Image (cartoon, rainbow, N blue to C red):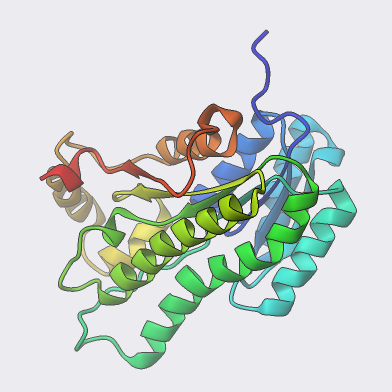
Length: 259
């Protein structure tokens, strides 16, 4: 029998009510982790936790309402994680939004909301998770950035900027932990388009199949990403399989950034 890669580890996942976040939470549990599923949609996070508990037992899952832009919510979530599971080994900053618009099209409110969720949220998560992670043994922070952090688009100003900020935050956090001698790694994942509801913000009122087809043709391998592609990357970075990786980026772009 193959050993579970995350047995006796504790993970916190943001944006875990649906889509990639829910799949990540379930994937971590499948590899042995106890999981705190968090989301602004507390009921959705609870539904994810319930699915995990139904398969792996109630002791392996819990849920917490968390608005990643709210400092007090983060403090409460980290406290809840420590009280429920006794520590924290894996933080997955997955929550994010896509805002479409050029620098002239976007209003300041949309820009600030994008930065708040995509960059401020992970900043707060790292800030408040580190003390508990230091007490818990080996740790891994996985930040969900995007290939859009590396490849700009004329109509993705807020998304490009916020995901690039997260990319650099990842490296700073990783170097901070290394300098302190803490056994905590921090890496980022950079997917291309992934087949989830999050793409709806990009598709808008256009024909979904037509737009997804156009997106797939932009990717050298000829397809957009699937949720399981991302889950596998998270499991790799969360586990000791990637013990020599920190301050690094894992591109899931089908060759797009090589063009």
